Image 1 (tube, one colour):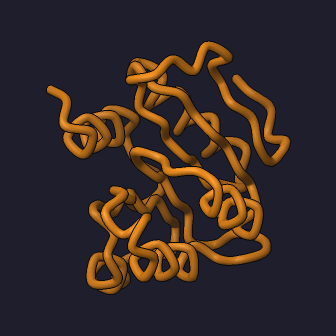
Image 2 (image 1 turned 90 degrees about the vertical axis):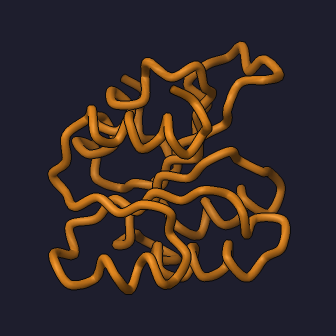
Length: 138
């Protein structure tokens, strides 16, 4: 598993054609579950534990998908999602919100523009299936 140092690409051979997935999660155990869930995908990963750092990264990069927690140090996931949907370059990037905020916010998250919502804890196979669908894979 990669360390949670704010930012690290998991795969040094970031080849063209591979999907680039941004994961923004500050809880180490959830970060590890997300990483394990998505490991089977032919993708490159960027990991951030702080929302402000993730926003800065998004200003210079265009991921193919984002896995986003809502409760983050710095800028929270709500603000990141709102920023992405208001920024033409990022507006169509699929976002999976993974949160422990509990029932009742799923509709708010989807209305704000998330493509999918998962409550913590979640099954790794569910996240993997959602990611495959959003990336247009079978």
